[in-house]
Length: 166
Image (cartoon, rainbow, N blue to C red; front, top):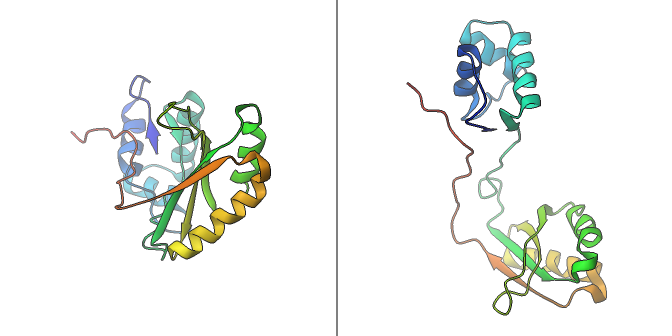
């Protein structure tokens, strides 16, 4: 969960963010579990979180999987050189593939970096990732001018902004 630092928070909002910024409990009713720990009704926690989300205090609530724990040891960022005038349509198609966890555009840095489309592919082995990258190449067809796969060497901690506990 990411939160903006300039939005006004009352004590209850701050308590909710502090209680959830390291993740929601893995229970059937996570918001009610948070509420129980804070001594407020579950409906209030949900309403406050919806309000903070609408105001932009909370940018998003999303699962952040640990791909290594899930058995995906070969994690490759495939980078593609595709025509700039077709990148939106091509990116939509690549991003819709079930094995692509995220896909986005990045600016080229010529002459050193020609790639403008990035697609993360996870697999149990490099051979599995390479096979999936071949599927992306086939999907892109003649729009694909060049590509590379950049493999992860270590896990980076993925967190958003954190409020300090005082």
